Length: 486
Image (cartoon, rainbow, N blue to C red):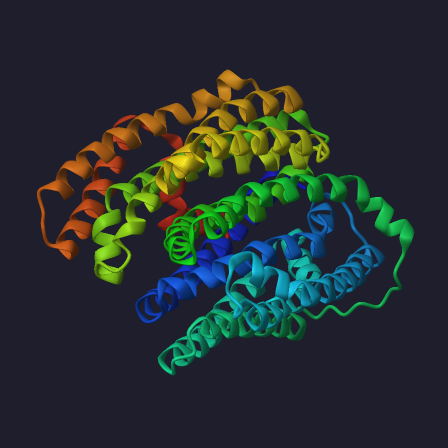
């Protein structure tokens, strides 16, 4: 494929992924704000306890094979059908196991309500399993418009259902049924609109063809899921559900930006990177461009969330969730490292080195567990600071590993992002100073946003940063006119 075609497809994919994530997070935020004001900390704690098990169940259902389909150069009909049938079989089997384990889950967290709640909640990953391949086919083709539409429709319908149930006094059940409705609507839309139906039979040969990459992704994803959920598990079991509710809120709102950013990068960049896996020179050029693009956008956004966290929480929730503000700030700071290491994961996966990700994730989990042992008796805030320090150390490790596997020098990786980090830190200092002088929350937030945007733009303009010029050209439609992006 010609480089101009690659740029065209990448721009179109980035456009729809960005629209998807922006619309999804806006709708998710509106629903989350209403529910956060209607439901109790214990309600969110109950959901947080279930999400620990939900995350692992979803991981085993997919088993890394959908990522393997994206990485594979030319998957055929049999490959898609085989992975679909495998996902469905795994989802049913795991759901049966969790159905019988529900009383044990309730006993672990000391709340009998978790039996019924979890048995319904866990149905969502069975429903999601029906659409994993549909989603990945569209991602592989870099035609993600239908994914964006399905997410938007699903969030509108499920958000309405969840808010209605919360007003009706259903407590944690409002979030459970919201999750079920979201999964059903998204899956139904993708099946109705994609134009693809499975026609081939299950093939062990096809399964083996994606196993090498899939098993590596599965193992690394398992370890990653452990690191992401171990804190929720420990806080709920070691402290109480109310504390878990506060952590869940801080974690959820910080992840809205962090995970959306990471997902945009994966779904937009991985198909492009995988097409360059046999052309090292083009791969390294693409990596440099993606490093700069990610740093240019991620640093100012995450730092603005940190400086403006207090007015954001007060505008959305009043003072109900003030306990979660400091947690949110630390998690956002940690999120910068999460976004960057997620980007490096894409580089390693794109060249087919998925098994190397296993060792990569083991190192991360060792750091996380060490941080837990050191901080668990110091309180929840100390534990979250432990996450931040462990993530910073792991980022340094990931730069070295990525350099060794891809040939892209570690010093160059750091040099790619350093100018944007320095600019964002200087901007954040001015933004924080602006916010510290304004008492009104709405005026405070709007002033910080304006100052952040203006100062960051001006500094990058003075430095003649090419990434900013390209981003603005596309945003203003010049890229569209030049390349006929639609």
